[in-house]
Length: 114
Length: 112
Image (cartoon, rainbow over all chains, first blue to last red):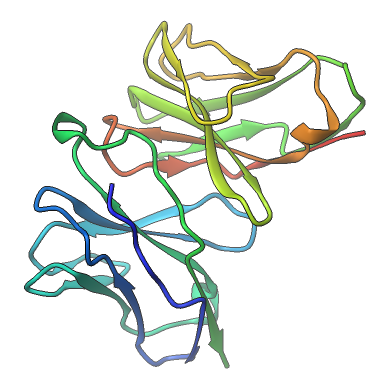
């Protein structure tokens, strides 16, 4: 699975959009981009994933560039409860050589300020 | 409500005293796994199970055992715990092996 690069930390004001970038310049054509977050010592929480197209769910939006070498997770109206470490993970389907386990990097520590 | 439960949530024990951390899910997921999380090392997979009676080693299986006798349960067994197994443990489940995973609340284990 391809490696990802994320900023170590970011700050965001409460109520504003939080835009978390992720670089995955070595991503392969069959690899998906997954986002998880971990609120202090709780179990990681799945947020969203996508392959090529932008995706949106009740938690967030995922914007993937046309060349797929980077993506941005958007929390449209950040709240204090969104303070967490956010992990960007690139992963291929098992049937195409992907790993069955999640490989968590260091992630981005997002702090939402009042 | 879909959930993954772990018990106990906190445990302090002594070296060599066998213990079991339970994991149970109500989502009928086939795939389950155990991770440990340590400062500076991130989350590392210990064991995983693709279905009942099918288990395999992850990256750090030494000192751990697992069993999968029922679909909903995947206990983690430490036959002879040692201080280097002091860690935060998470159970995770997934409908399929490469799908999105759902994590339990964690078990903080301290071995003295």
